[in-house]
Image (tube, rainbow, N blue to C red):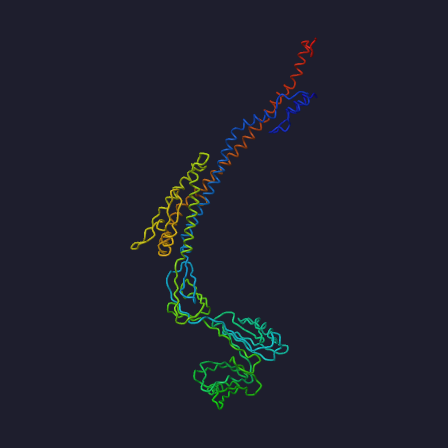
Length: 566
């Protein structure tokens, strides 16, 4: 096969869209002649011309992409405005937020959203406290304790007896602490050590009288504290459990002014018998003493008197569990906790101190700071949205408007947003209002359509007329300014049928159609043109490469030699 035939075969077999073989170079190499025609460049130039419609379509597609980007930004900004309005049109939003101010340091308070504004007077007579007891000193937390026991009883009726002694659960203070904490009594025990030694401290897990507890210890004999001459017992009580079988438990109460003789008679008079004998004595100086002993001298009895002697622990009651006592607007209130809920609807009181008879004024009011933040956020987001819209109608450095200048969605949105600002609130029949327009809140419209806020005017309205501000945004039934503007924007922001979604879907569809059109044009026309032009220009190049040889043959046939005679 000649070199030219080989080239022709190669040309006829070429099917690629873009020639990967430089035909001109091959022909020049096989013929030894210089290439007369750049086939690759000639084909590329022809294809470029043929693709002129594609460049128009691609420019349209670039415009559609820019429109999608711009419209999506406007959609996001407008949705943010709608979200702000929704927060200003709910009974649990910032307009319903409340703050509480207190005239004293003994009481602070918080108010739930929507709490009725108003003034209240609180008097704290006493704080709630937790029950607490502590033992007598031991040398250390790990020192071995003598054989003994005590019974811990809660107000709710739970009870546990803790024993010490060799092999018992409470051989040391640390052991006692662990045993108590494992009994589920609603108390917490710990060992407190200082320079004088170690004590077992027990405290209720919660405050209030219902969480209080008592500690009683077994005795075979017990001696009460001495009452100095001229003094008497106060109103009090002690609880004893008998040394008899079956056991008898009795609470003996004393009234103010009684003496030990009367108390002894009351103890000895308990029926059935407590199995003990109480003896009252008075010395020469008039000091009174009381001793209680087991009748058989060996069977122990228990008594909850904290200052009893003869025990291994001699527990002392540090504080009794007690409820807080207060009055709220003159109504007496008892609370197990110093955090009091329910005394004022929607308000939680925090009792920090007690000053009987001293009133603390609480004022529940709108949370002006939170409302101001919400309103300013609305203004900021509105300005962002209207600014993006305005940009589409502004002549840029290129001398043209934005890509959405003729988009009906954007054109209508600009008008809708500005008209929505003209809302005027109508007060209920027989009432007046200080806030009927945005201007009354210090919110005014600038020449470019954006909004400005006069902070002084806004703060005055929030401080002096919070109800009017709330009514402007919410209306009497969540039908005020916020609802009015939200309804206007819904036509654009509704996820499925809103103008933004419809417009973006249309742009996406147009872009997809152009892509399909370009692909079809490439497949059905450009690919074929690639083959045709490559064949045509390659054939022309072959002919040009053969021309010198043909010319030489013609000259030879005409008898012309390749040189001159001199």
